[in-house]
Image 1 (tube, rainbow, N blue to C red):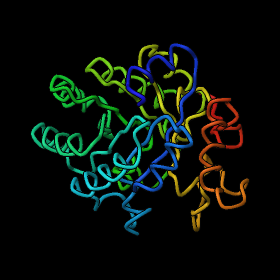
Image 2 (image 1 turned 90 degrees about the vertical axis):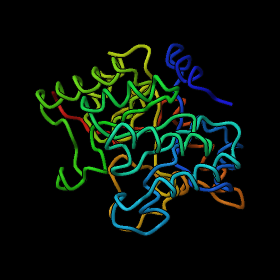
Image 3 (image 1 turned 180 degrees about the vertical axis):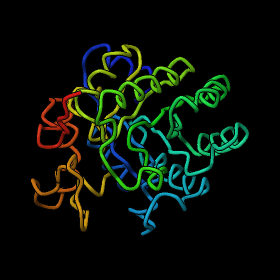
Image 4 (image 1 turned 180 degrees about the horizontal axis):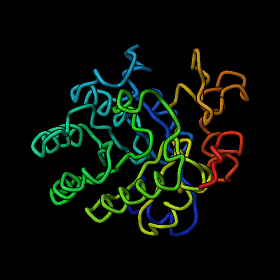
Length: 269
């Protein structure tokens, strides 16, 4: 089973690692066979599974249910679980929510935010709960951002994001996830923290790992498709097409061919 220590070793060795969202046991088993390194039980299930307009209605109980299903289906990947909207608004909320999803099978919790999360990260880490902090475009704050847009477009905004990363890393964050930021910034942050693995989604090719929503990489996106998405299913055929798509994604992340320049945001900072 892939562990947090393995992810750190991958970074030290310059070996990229793959991550996909997953919500059920059958997909989890296919990802195990494909040797996908890590799985995120994302609150994206609100849209992908529940058919909602955003992630905001998702509950801790939802996350625990899907975490348990994924864990039963996969004994290989490192498993992270999102703490959903307002489930970590107070320290007690964060502890109780984390307890629930960790007991369901998560090896790490993921929270969206910046420097203001430092105390929460510190308390969770002290209680044996590894934390991934999600920065950049944070979907739980979509109404604050006014939509799903590229973040940190200016040097000042990039420096603020770096300061947020420093604050949560100093508090004990074990992993960073950057979404929808310029490739240059993804590289800067990845290099700035040599001991902290950095996962990107729309953050360029220089991050240590890559993550996509599983429905997106299988082409099950109806309507707008984000720039950073690649349809790996389109390249496969036959009865094992989904499994082959997972294998192709894992291989493309490891060999650096995903993301390609067409899937990154090139902004001079």
